[in-house]
Length: 152
Image (cartoon, rainbow, N blue to C red):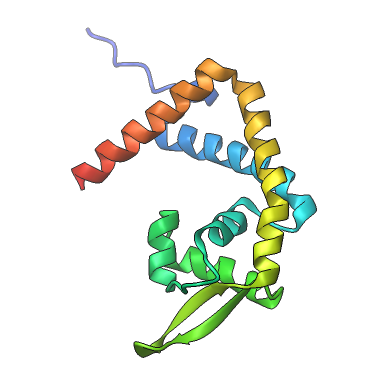
């Protein structure tokens, strides 16, 4: 008689790829969030501010595309930034139903000040991973993103 295959083991070393990517993403985001906290921003908010210009407004959909995020996620990032007067939301002159998001002068100043926090997070990540691993991680992320995008 043939014995049945053993049940799949579980544990941190045997997490599926999606779980490992989520864990890594959370850890990396936390490093950036901690470094940007003194500037009153999260990494998502900093990224959104970095996408904006004082000369041209962007719609939520365009912001989501640039950030490679869901439009609902971007909408959640917009509200606190608007409440803090770091961005302004205006009616799209080409489509009165649409809204455009603009960077304010205060948002520009906050983004510039927060650049130091972002750089500190970059440096901390490089130290924790080491230069070779950081370069390998960037390569793998770029490669995986490109392959997954073309597969869709």
